[in-house]
Amino acid sequence: MIGQKWNIYWNEYSSDTYLYGSEINFLENHKVEFCNELMPPGTVIKKWYSKTNFQAQKIEPALPMIDGEGEYKIIVDITVDDEESCIGRLVFFDRFYKEIGYLFLREKEQVFRCPLNTYSYELHLINGGVTHFIFNAVEIQEIIDEPEKKNKKVK
Image (tube, rainbow, N blue to C red; front, side):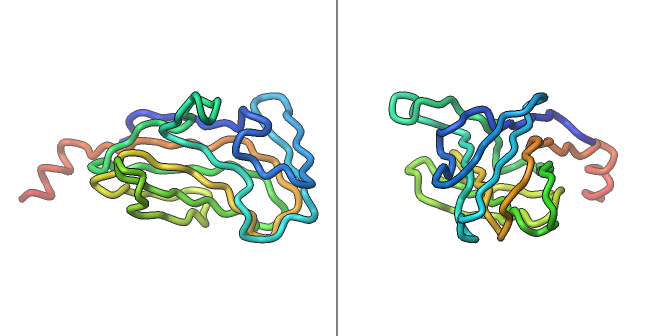
């Protein structure tokens, strides 16, 4: 059963975006066209945050707050020529901003749990060899176990 659902869009032009040689076009319906033929693979193209320092970064958090007890599904909606040319990475931090875990997102849909002591997290879009793509959105869905299933597991 699906609980709450959040859509994450690419709203900022330059904030935590790889701009060197990049052509970025904001299209209708929150879509973004990205083109860069010189960017090396492994480069972080864009970052989204669950917590920010507005005075330092001048952006608001784009990711929802999630906890370490829940299970979530993430759906990355990007139109590319090659299926594995864009990679997502979730990076989890404790309250002292020490990295406590990460998860690579190689599929369009993936279920995950964050570490129990997660205080904040980031979503990184990484170049896996792509030169052109259209970013539509990222959707995060909370997965809720049905009470009947929980009772069956306990028995």
